[in-house]
Length: 225
Image (tube, rainbow, N blue to C red; front, top):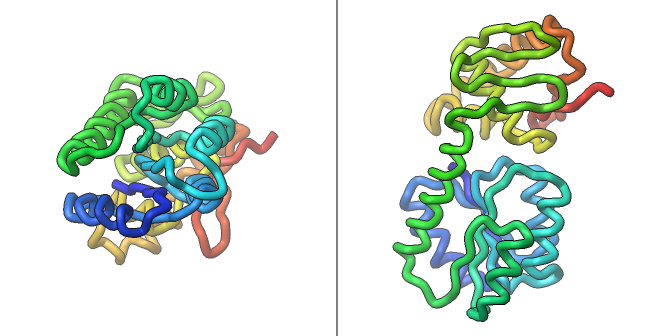
């Protein structure tokens, strides 16, 4: 699981990052609001943790920008603002959880895990969609224009990631880590093979969606019209 940690205080950022890493999360750290938005747009994060002490942009600006871009990310705000109106404002503007300082690290980790469980549960019975294609999570079937194609396990897992992240770019490394695990670096070349299979199946369905390759970076979905 990948976490983006946006915190203006490097020392406090390390206090949060270290237990996350020990809990087997992959953590990227940024220290200002602009970097947070840039990383969020081009990374495939499961949770973004935003500390309200960021420079350049405040937490509300970041929340509004993330939701305006319709990025499919879970956002966890931590703050030294303890007034209930601040918490309500944060939640109303797109935060999925809000934790006031000071707090115990164990509670912070528990809340991150709870957010991830909530995200997975949201997918449990749903059909994911992007453009004119739909992915049935119960049957591993890809649907478009009343046509159906069943996907193989790895195709399904890759397609689920691509649809879940929409226009966000997923790197080969991210796809391999999420589909095969951290230690399967030999699978990097196989990603291109599976992407080719998926492109052919999407085309066979007559979809207006395509998988775009960003040279040297990765892949994302794009409507052709």
